[in-house]
Length: 200
Image (tube, rainbow, N blue to C red):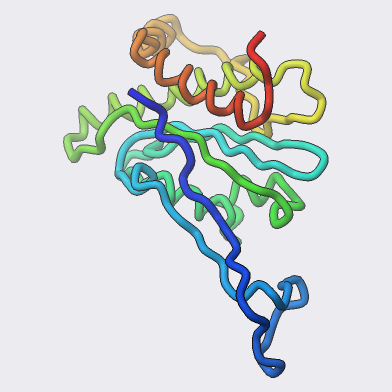
């Protein structure tokens, strides 16, 4: 499975200056009439996924690891999670809450899917358990990737310090298959390229 990559791209089209009486926000250059936002088709799929947000600023880079399909009833596409990250609802806007200068950064979402969403409760429970473990795994790998990089910060590092029963540890370990490892490695490889870290 190849990593799904970027959610989309944001571009600016240079157009002639607008009429003098057209309202423009102070931060909007008069020579920029319109913006263009494109979406990766994979970002629209209703599947269980893990992702890394790469938020690049002038002086540093912030990372955030997340997942979709982490609740009992539904599973929204990655693009839905992207929108929530910048919502003015503080319950959902994890990225906006953690990055004060969020409007002054460039964002890339690197992601991949694991399971299809299904209505069967038992199958969905297994998919939720798997994606929870994949998020923990990806978080650990991203921490290793940026170790020692002073200008790169993971905003939500997983500590793994809480007590976990042996039976639960065994169940979680079973999800860490070779196929899952290839998927996680594929995501980390793209993130490494995005942040300019060479493989050690």
